[in-house]
Image (cartoon, rainbow, N blue to C red):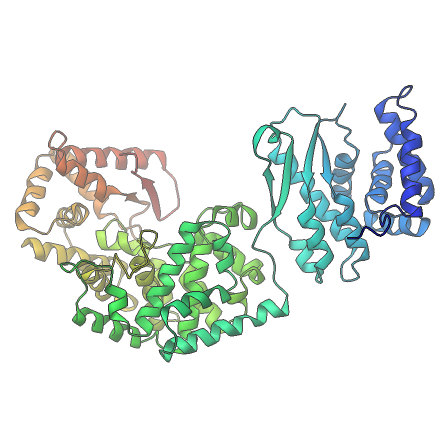
Length: 586
């Protein structure tokens, strides 16, 4: 800061230095613990604090006074009062960490530059010192978890980022919420040294950041007016605060979100050439199909409030997939949908773009984000009718943006996600949404068009009936055998009548009781008959069996039946409607 004398060594700091120096003179005839305690006693006297070698609480209080850089009775009183404000359980835990010596109680944690954190909290008029003590306990607890396997006596944790964070924090709620990670030092010191790194997702009450949402609103207006070019659009999407979560965490998810936002931009501003520029000439989406996409969007999406909600949905959808986001904000939950539902309900200020929407927009975004449904599995007939139950409930809602409009917006978000599914490969247009894939997607849209007015099974049957028609066979919704053959055809992704006939032949090669059992499982809906089993990647598994003549499709069907049988036995008594079994290893 300055070479004009010693700024640090004031009379107060020299007094502290002198106390330490005098204590160290006794190292030749006293233990390290006794010398350390001797220093605490001297400091406790100056701070008007009582201390006893056998009382962890009093030693912890005295050490906190040292760490907070207080040197008088008034300062000692402030530290003591803050310490007493901790609930008994926290106070006991913090006392244990603060008194661990690294000799008898190992490991001991040295939080390097911790006095900068505590002093900043003491001087910060906007926050209370007790909040810094709670944060200190969190650091100790996280450090203990990270270094649980270490055999070192002392582990050093750098806390410089927390010092800055504490000094500039102007909101107690924000400091209380602080999320961080402890990152081990690379190399030979990894088992004894780490650093506190603040997570990008923090509670946001900063008016400047919250007001920045207005920039996102203006971007939506410019998209609808076709007054923003693609490069300008890409430069402006970081105005959505949550984009920095992706930028600092997972580059693949950042590309995924950017690709989805580009799909929204291309479709909302009618940029056919940009959308198709990366597609091969023989696969390219046609002008006619593009017009159908735009016509579909006009029914619901091309309104400013809704398009704004769509953009926010696509960004937060990607954020929900960040592993560390889940670990720090919803550690007891597993799916991105569950994690996001928890965050939106309990700490929505972590998602300022969502938080600043109006109530109806937030409801729409939430409905779109919490649906645990795979449209791809629906098209392949891997999904079961019960998987449509929550989608049907959404389509039947009457409040806010609910009902058919909400369903259309949700399906458009699905479209944007699927169209951008190869964004990690390239952002030059949508590589995925070619003409054939749009035709498949469009049929799925049509199949779900009457979901609010018909059963989930009837909607799934539309997919099966279409496949049966392609294969030139009759689909009988009342026959388990007919439904099983149609589902197998969908799973095997066959469209040629000859291939459809081969599936029938392979199915009939099974023993009669095997045919009945397999058909029963394939016809289970999870609504009337439950639990039903969703065999994830069953289609890829069967298609591999077709290609491998040494295995054959009949063997693949028998393996599916074995999985169904084992799953039924394993999950006996389970009350879930649908149980998912991963077949990835197959």
